[in-house]
Length: 585
Image (cartoon, rainbow, N blue to C red; front, side):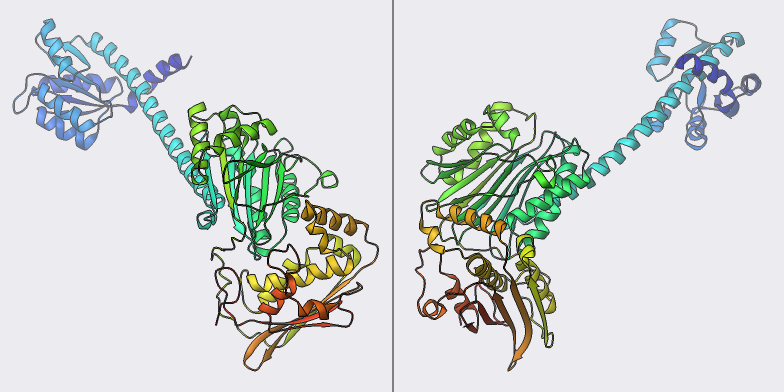
């Protein structure tokens, strides 16, 4: 049907074609021109081959009728030059010659001609050939037009893909290069990867790492994974704990994505000072924690649905807690890597993973995973990712990535704010990031101040856990003590009937030095602060290091009454070292 339509169109459109008649005999030139004009063509003439070449470049005719024998330049040489000048554009050339043998026809076709007519011309034959050439020309022009539109569409699509790839790559690789303790690898099955690895430091120095895997692969999977990056980075930077971040991610995925879209994710928080790892695994294969000498220390399997599946009232963001007492590596992979390696996404698969890396030195374990994945599958059928985090007790180095640290401190005048947290607010509000954010902005900081965050966290955490909830730190000395302590904290907080915390923060000057006065008072029974202030904590104890930290960081620390109220003077003009602590004088 399409060809038939084009044939009809060819006849109707002949008048739109132009023909260049090349002949050195004026009479033949005139007769041929008159005949073609009657057929509806626009006609130009040339008296020899050289004039024909110039006319083709100048006028760009659709068809050329070329005599073979002419002075100055013959038809064959002119045809070769015209072909060179026309490049990829098809220009039909019909030769006219007084030589009727087949050898002349072959020479004409070999030199670039498309057809051949013998003089004297039969106008019946010429009419039929011109109509055939016009039909072919129309089909050719339509094909060229479609090719041009297809090339333009492809170029636009590639430009959009480059733009999307650039944005996705920037969002996914934020700050990863600054983390010496973190290795990662991602292989995309398509141009876009649905796997996303992100890492950032909280103001406290805790390292947050995320391995997200959008359902499927390609652009749709990559777009599904992107919404989790904004809450991950912004809430980590402000110091929100892992459960709060996971909660926000789940809500955001449910708000933004279609119901059939979800994101398997693993969220990890490593507190190198406290030697605590928090793991939230929703829908990804189990994580393995492997010692330096290759022993499998722990497997953290998925205990939750992927992000975006469960509504708020059925969703749990509580992480699994693991305390490391020796150098080890936490290894997390997406299901694409497990599938490529031939492992099931279960505890047995995690054991096979551990067996693979056990024979390798810690620095070569990521390469071993990559090699296994590539050898098993060649080109990966699904996106594949692996993350290796090296955890060494006592490691405290924090990358200097914040614009807030080391920034000039300006005096904001005398100011203060007071906030009282009720029982219900203590259960639902993460107050420390809020206090840190307000105090920072009062002095023009745009990002974190590690030291201030640690002080606020220590004061508020003590008021809540020991003052209001009455938790004993000795629990942390028991086997799995830290996990037991966190479970008690959660259950007591959920059952809390009465309890309040008041916080007052004031900006002031002591001499020429800007200070913050921070007062925290809770409704608890207090503690023997006189004894606590007189004794320093053991460095290897999992508790009791808060008061020594306050005394080291703050200008003054004063407990009042029964110990349920404390005021510290926090200096704003002390530079921090690479561990987020005051630099030595």
